[in-house]
Length: 174
Image 1: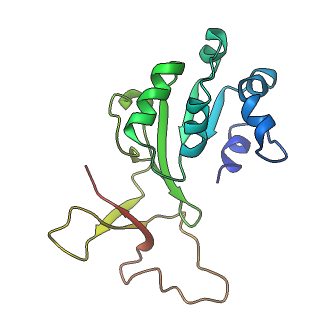
Image 2: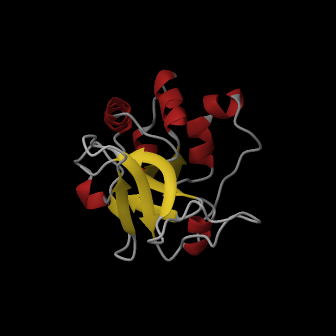
Image 3: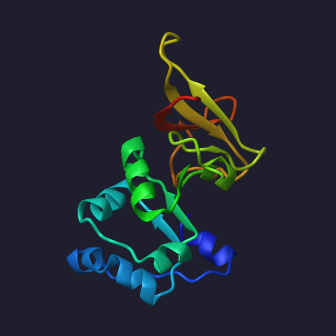
């Protein structure tokens, strides 16, 4: 998923051989050298950047248009700390390999700190299937045109009768 978006938008991708100390310590230099304007980070990396107390040059932070975050929940405190320190808004998203991207924060709605945003298309339907009606949360189930056909040589036990893909992820609507 992450490699498709830059190709669709005719963008450049910067890859490093592996993520190790050199990359962490030279994170902002690598971004500056390659004129990166969009960062796709995971919560762990955001925490590392904050923990190492990097300072960012104002002219560099102005060139970064977007910081997108996915793969795991990002705590509200971490998001606030990063945005305050670097003056760059983080857009959270939700998606899995089997369904492509499902939700994203919108630039116009970045005042809301929690959550992963709204559906990116009206053609996506999201249900929360609760095992216990008293609970606020349940399994995230998705129906979308971009859903995979199935796993190789396996039955589609993950797709229910209504054609919703059972993600195995837990969530709720707020």
